[in-house]
Length: 334
Image (cartoon, rainbow, N blue to C red; front, side, top):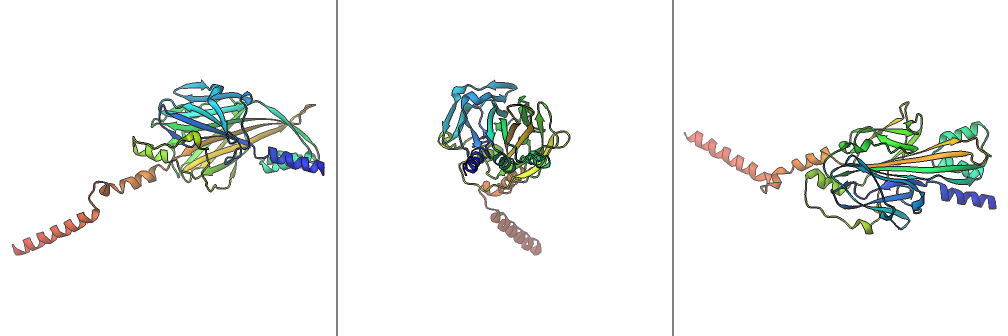
């Protein structure tokens, strides 16, 4: 019983501990105070904060430069680690965090459940095929996460920056040039090379960033919430089920952009090791970005142009009919 209890505890503590960088607003004003949240758990809920000494790299990329982030810019609240920063000049920006490896020992049952629950299905199939389902595991794992956000109106090329993490997602075009109905190709790199035939999971948060609409219309007056007192993603949303994709020979998956909102990709690349102390090594990667409503919203704006002028459309119709009637009787009399 004690062994079973320990296995269940291990599964609860370990499973679904993906790491994500998230923003409340992916469309920011230039030179404005902003916050990025670091979730360790699921996309919707963080299980625990991340210690500074675990962060091997924290980078902000924009304005053609890669900026290192000072550890004093981080703070914790409600199991979430927050980065307070000032957005720079107008452009597309990238933020990234890479953590140091840690080891965890799991008995065979806990390890198998963990592989199934977190979608490491290729390694689970390999264990079944090689009759290793009764083998315990000691895993070394590390996590490498990125988010892409838009500052101001100008689109720049920082979105394709390779941060040289052990594993990372790299989009093949700027997500902020896309609208619903498009598709985004994303390449997965492992040790700097395309990772072929890797399972990738894609999720979607239908939350629409109101700030994006303000940018789309060129409005200059904005109403901001105090993000320091608000958790990223705390609003209740209905999320789609994760869809699974496989990378092709170039390490690329194609993400269908069906609706506006926040999209996120996750993967765990795990390999078996021939080592006296370790049995497996895993590298976890996630990527988040937002897609605005784009063309459809601009269309709806133009459809109301007459009413915005202050003259209801029915006035034009009534006036036109009266004018036609007057002209008819005038020419008939002549």
